Image (cartoon, rainbow, N blue to C red):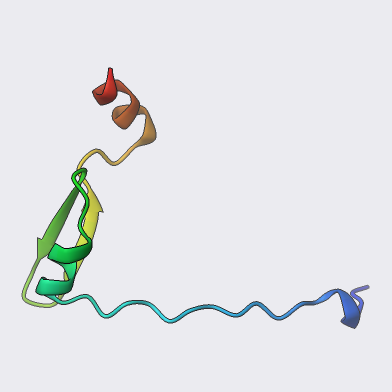
Length: 57
């Protein structure tokens, strides 16, 4: 059984609305800015942690 007192409310911050200018401001050196007609996204150049570790060597 679950106790009501153990459930804590988690407050989430709303996601950033990413525009082209905002994306260029917050983009780091190891990220791409993907721009499509529907969206603007930030993504890592090397997606897996293993690939990022190998690239640092």
